[in-house]
Image (cartoon, rainbow, N blue to C red):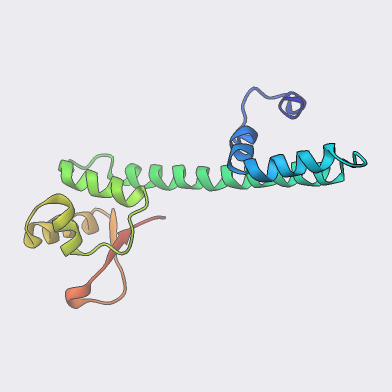
Length: 146
């Protein structure tokens, strides 16, 4: 709370409480070491600003992801995309495991591989997807991020 008040700003883009929650065990370990024995608070004084640094770095990562998403949707904003294309783009933005192929697209959207390839080709033309290195039957696609 003192840290938040010292900033003098009503807005913060990092969450110290969320970071402490993620590092709960380390937080309690540092606190316990500071409260037992000779009451040496050095561990706590070292841990706390390091935790703050990790909270700020995490906020930077989260902001980067938000900007990445905004960039993709900004490019596709005026395009009339079918629901299945929107759904797959959202899935890719949310952290799709592995590489996207027309076969995976077909399974995700429950369409034929020909329809999947047409959907992918449309998104490549709209700069929503890009073709990765390689080709043939194993052609892979990923989000086109600028």
